[in-house]
Image (cartoon, rainbow, N blue to C red; front, side, top):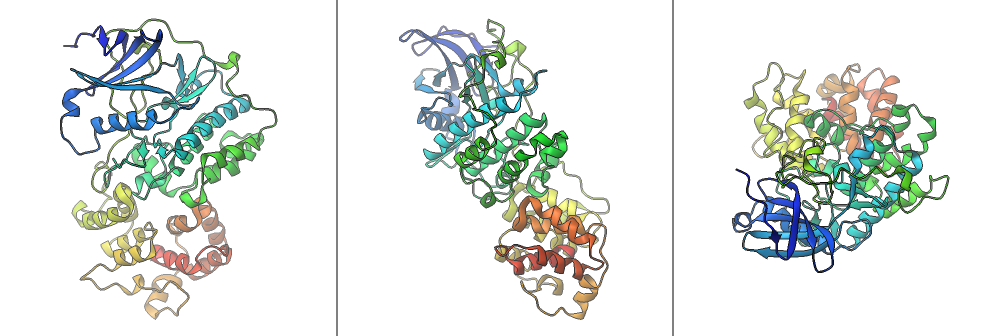
Length: 497
């Protein structure tokens, strides 16, 4: 039975319900002291007093209050107050009369390039401001970006933000929304402001093309984000006028954070350089979508509060008329999604140890990587060799290939530099002609060093090589001086097996 809607939360008069769930309720309310509408996001007291140290709903609620509360910027939804009463705790937030960016992307009338630039510059302004104050959002996506009725973009839902004083991320748990989060959020590497830069790149791509650069099931998206380069925007749209955006997107969507724009401000500067006319501070009035229908329902049937893909709590849209929310981000404990199929001819137990050990280095994507690599291979040793290239750190990769108590096979200990191969290695690798799967294996091995151009390099070098030895030599010839050729050579030999 639905709980009755209270008349007050603290001193605020309740006008209706925007969303509800296991965590609490989001209300539209009135602030009598200043005579303005506000949004109140509540959390049940039992969650606050649970004593649970896991990164759950109550902890995320506190982080949202802390993270957004320290930010005062025109492109960030303001937090006015954090309070408590006998029923629980609540956050009082700015009320934004408008629509979220998802509705603009799916509207019949598509956003034009100047309008996309207008929204992107506002987003990057807000992100840079937050980053400079130690707050990384980590879940930038269309549903968390509101367009007010004055054309101003507002970032909302800091429920999984990371602050300098918080650490809610648990090992082997994916935080964020599939399709928008950066590779390092899947592979358990350190996370900083550049994850938001990656998400901004996804949004830019989506607004200009109508589709995201990484699509499919959650598992397919995860694999593509970590290992596969995106298709250039100009190829997807068949629009030569968008070709200048390819370079910006290549950098924003780089797999390696070091190859991305170091700050949101740097990406903003690059985008501003592509503008052919003055970019307005807000979306023009004629492009702002009409406000949602008036009136809120007291009984919510909308998305549940507490999910990372749930309501922002700042839109005046009636619950009953909200479009379906996108799938919520999934947390994948252990080594990866349990639904990843076991390759034909394999027993899951035979791959379990490799999956577990690899997960210590690359996080929950390990199961997908191992099971994909096992297709067409016949031994655990061969699988181990194939997946080792996904470990970026060279010493960690060596430990994975030669754990305690097991002597490394000859093919796994080739030095990270040009040394004479043994006859067995020559026969197993360099003496063999190129195989159909070699380009894919080499691409995976090259990604940590080359980023999105890995597949292009692998394909070009394979086109002019008859043997694996020739192929490796041609790849080494293509490397820039800043790339560690010895490491690349070692990675390629292990991947090719």
